[in-house]
Image 1 (tube, rainbow, N blue to C red):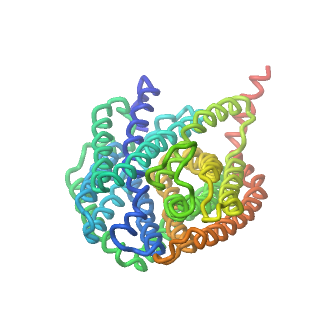
Image 2 (image 1 turned 90 degrees about the horizontal axis):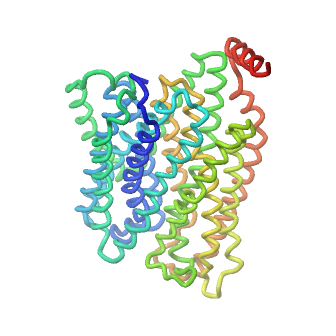
Image 3 (image 1 turned 90 degrees about the vertical axis):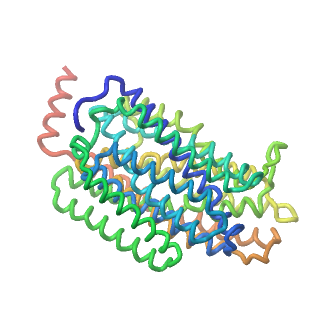
Length: 500
């Protein structure tokens, strides 16, 4: 941390909450309709749309390590946030003007991928610095912060598909851009609340050569990313290379460390690998689960007609919003009593719930109508299970990184965490393609069997992964709780004083 803490941590948190709300508003509004847009507007087959969507998502998260590096070492955390948000805004405006021009669409998506990569790790890094010295509040703070993500996504995933269906997606994408305008305005107006909280690079005077070089790099990466979306095999190889480099550096850091620090980083690495499995399943929401809702789920619930089946994706942020305050309260309550579940146990429980969410959808086929349509309540239940699982894994992943890795590496390793989503996006696209059917197959009875079989298989495999994770919980707890001798002596003395 640079400088001193702000007087009012709550106000600073609220500012970051507002920032993340509007940034995620833009991104999830796009994500909700993108796979369907590829099919309806660009003429792609289902399988192709899933793979292209996966490649785009991989870039979105694969570039996050670059943004973490820029925040840590080049521009500083706060300046990088502003730059990333500006690039995102430009990308959404381009998307709104692209229409059905595939080259323009891919260029816009390239800008959005770069902007997200620059932006994504840095608000989380800023939040972790804000709570230095109050680590016991981190799980609660990150859970509430995660709620901002889901409030923003809920509003945009409800609004953009409906507006797109009524007035065209061009307007929907423009609304995403306006979310970034508000994000930038709010952050620039209230940056004084986090004055003095930044990386060492942020404490230095802005270097114009560094800024101009960064902007030039962003422009180049935007065009490269656009090209990669048309050359997916190259994109996959590039992600593999990035993954090897980032995790190679992570492993090198583990070997260079010692004692408790090494144990903590090994635990973080194992939890990151577990998260890859979860994010592969999470990526089914905007792809295979979304198309299942369109083709095989009743488009009404409680007598309310659903104008666009893509709106069912809002069930995920809906459950997150309801559950986040409850879990944040429980973490704080049991944490203060020393009874909270360990991070590895929360990850294993989250995976169990996620397995159940796919088994529920697979089982729903047994109750389908003769026309191959299932009640929307099955989807409600499935999203409930997966959303609680998400809070236990994705919602606490950033907190896990903040607790287990040295602060000087926080930006880079936040990027390593988000890289799990990039890798999972590619795998998730391939998994989703297992449910793909030809365009001329529109009979729900035929598509129901495909979805049911694949989702059941996913659920059973995930149960096996859950069992392995549960068996590793004791080992991971030992790694996480390991202390250096000096730290252990200080803690023992403190406990002795308290006992007296």
